[in-house]
Structure formats: structure tokens, C-alpha cells
Length: 288
Image 1 (cartoon, helix red, strand yellow):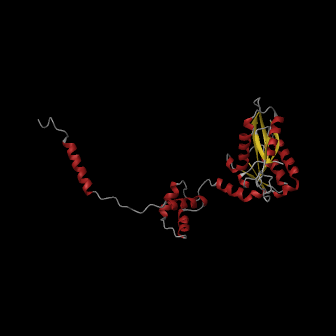
Image 2 (tube, one colour):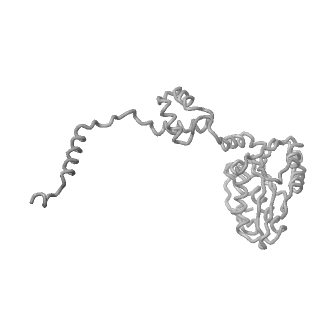
Image 3 (cartoon, helix red, strand yellow):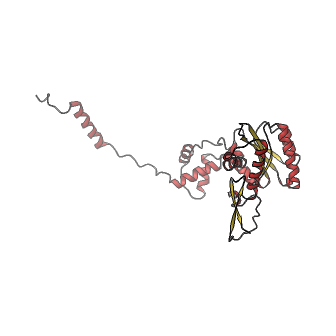
């Protein structure tokens, strides 16, 4: 009778009993070492990122100087969790190029090709060079069939146009496009300008040129239909004029490339609007 109306099985009852015994005699987990504070974790990752040739023991020694107390093993775990493996850490290329670009910006040129498509689906290519320190852009030429000889000739015309100003440049950053040949590099080498080739498939190593290409497309090329090569050349030259003489740049404290940073302008009582690049862009200037 009792077996027929039982609520639980003997196996369940025994399991509950064993669980109670285990709970009674189980020791509480030890607290262990206190966790590394978040601020110190960030400092460890910063040291590992900024110094790719430092191992965890070198980081440990550097942290002891300002009085931080953390074990080498903890530093190693934090660096590994952040993807900063044993030193020397691989692929520090982006950081090295960032440092190089900042150090050489006063005498740095950057070049690249940008493309636009016409209403007839013909692809046109424009070669440009930027003076990185001032962000001044030179549109060298537009063609449907860019060749190495064409790019080399455009480089010669640029240096002729720059004249004595070319002596202030020391490096040119370019990608590894086949149109940039040894003859192209030799044109700049003749003026004492060293050509620095960006790593393969690394547009981030030529950021100023890439940013200009993005600005052209966002503010100009993607907002109108281009008829032919002549139309594309006029539009790009108009945009370069706006870019150099009016467009503010964060890297220049919101000054345009050709603005004089020594000139302090007082607030204008009245301003007037001028439409540039076939009316695509508004420019605001002092009213006379």
C-alpha cells in the first residue's frame, strides 16, 4: 500500500542526504589574491601596446618604479588576454607607420589614385599628391588609361610646378600600385625626396590620401553625374580649390590648408554664402 503511494524513490532520498552531508562539510572557497584593479590593467595593456618589444618581466620592472605591486604572472595573463603575446609582438606595422607619419609630417608628401565613374560607366582615374603638413592637394591629371609612363610624367610636372618649394620635402608615401615604378620614384629622388612604400594591402598606412579620397566621394563625386574626362577634371580641380582655400581641417585646428595660422580673424558682423563645386558645397565668407 505504502509502496503504491510513495512520493519519492529511495534513490532520490539518498541523493538528498548525500547533498546535505556535502554541503555541511564543504569548505568555503579561499579568497585568493585580490583582483588587479581596472586602472592598473589598462596601464599594463598600454605599456604592452606602446612597447611591442617588452616582455611581461620588462613591464613588471617598469611598473615597480612608480610603486605598482603586481606579480609577473598576473601581467603575463593580462597581456595574453588582451592579445599581446610574447615579445617581440608581431604586426606592429600600423603603430610604426603612425609614428613615422607624425615625425615626418613637415616634409611629407602622400600620393594615390582615386577613381570616378561617368554616366556611361567609364572609369576614370585621377592622380593626386597631398602636402601632409598643410593638407594642400594637387590634382595632377585625369585619364581613363593610367600607365606608368603617364604617372611618371605627372610627377615631373608636379615638381616643376612646386619649383623651389620642393626642396622642403623629404619623403613621399605611396602604395605598391604597378603604375608607381622605379622611374616614378627616380623623379622624386632627383630632388632628394625619399619614397616610402606602404606595406601591401595596408591603406591605413597612407591615411591622409585615403581620407582625401573619402572626402571627394562623400562631398562631390557621389553627388553628381560625370559626363566625361573633361567634366571630371573640372569638378576635381574645383573641389581641390575649395579643399585648399576654404575647407577646415581638424589636423590644422579647423584652418584651411592655405590659411595663415598667424592671422587672427575677428568675428564678422555679416557673412555671405558662396556656392562652390557647381553648387554642391556652401562656403561662408565675410560680407564686404
